[in-house]
Image (cartoon, rainbow, N blue to C red; front, side):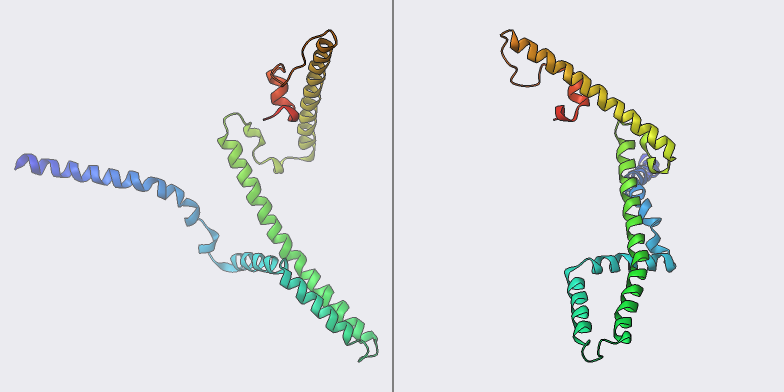
Length: 201
């Protein structure tokens, strides 16, 4: 009886550890859900939802049909109002206001989409073993640093092209002396196949 009682606390501890270990992943996975702005509310969340819904609605075919219907109705009313200045002012004012407001709504949606894409790319770079972590959060760098990295990749491309041209010249020289043409790029160096876009698989 003493041994059974002595083992009960240890068994409870093991059960607690298993439960905490099982829920560890769900807790870490739900970190974003707990920090989600949807649970905080406020005007920012309302504006986000309203911007996304408006941008989605304005990009549908029904919105285009509605716009055409309004334009057709406005044009049909022209003879009734004798094509007066007021008749022209109505469509000019309406389209100006709608366009002005849509700029902010669509820009908000595009900013969120661009930020989400950048975060996804940053996560892929961080998780990939061979990628450089310096490429994370690249959009925050200055224009000078971005131009420097662009020149770096351009130099890599030029080196790959030069190596590929050299290999092609060697292949043509072998063919000119009666050698059998290569059926694949197995004779290319590994660095050429990995660096040059045409040599990627």
